[in-house]
Amino acid sequence: MADGSFISRKYRIRQGIQTAVEMIYPPRCLSCGALTESDFGLCGPCWRDTPFIGGTVCESCGMPVPGAQDGYRIECDDCLRTPRAWHDGRATLRYQGGAKALILALKHGDRSELARPAARWMAQAGRELLRPNMLIAPVPLHWSRLIRRRYNQSALLAYHLGRETGLPVCPDLLRRTVRTPVLDGKTAVERSAALADAIATHRKRTHLMQGRDILLVDDVMTSGATLEACARVCRASGANHISVLVLARVAKDA
Image (cartoon, rainbow, N blue to C red; front, side, top):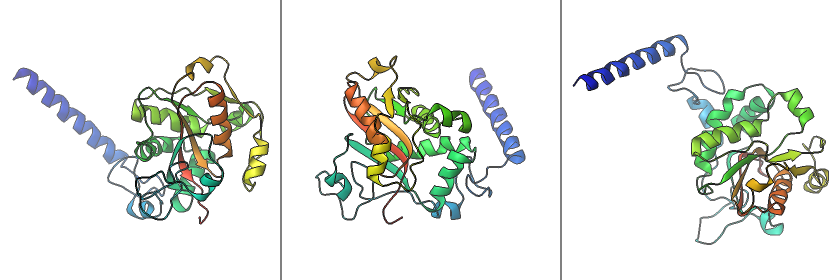
């Protein structure tokens, strides 16, 4: 009885502290700042404006596709036309509306706290990709951009994804050896050319990939050229099954 009473008192104290904190700092929407029912959430209007991907998707890149699952592997036209260097891929959001605003805030607006709830959404979207002892690795950022931005948003997502899933994370498994030009607006061919030889394995981490399943993490997939470059390097370093998981996918009709 004494132990139970002690635990009960601790619970009531903890609940009291939490209530006091919520009174001083009430939960607010991640996007617009309006009051919400829980921390790290979205209010109703922002939730409706945030296009989560559901239904049938391309199993290689996560792009939403029409139709229903029929027991066979489903791929979009782009992935059928040009097979990916990885095997499976998923995306959490369409890169539009509220999703685009959140990602730009994470990437350029110094809103690093967005990575935690975003990783929670990603863990849900990518649950079919996860394998025991899979190694999570972010798409690398060139050191010059890292100094200016102060953090790699993909590494933050990978870190929190590791905490959500219990899988190990290696933030410097890959290196970006060349500062590539801004790829926004570039064609798929131009993106691939710009990324030629721009990604390399960290020489002290190569052994971590040999015979191991790898999950590559990025914030946004447009053509997939950056993830292609990363996957090819992982494959050349002896990785086994390579999957990709991104926070958002640029859809053609977006």
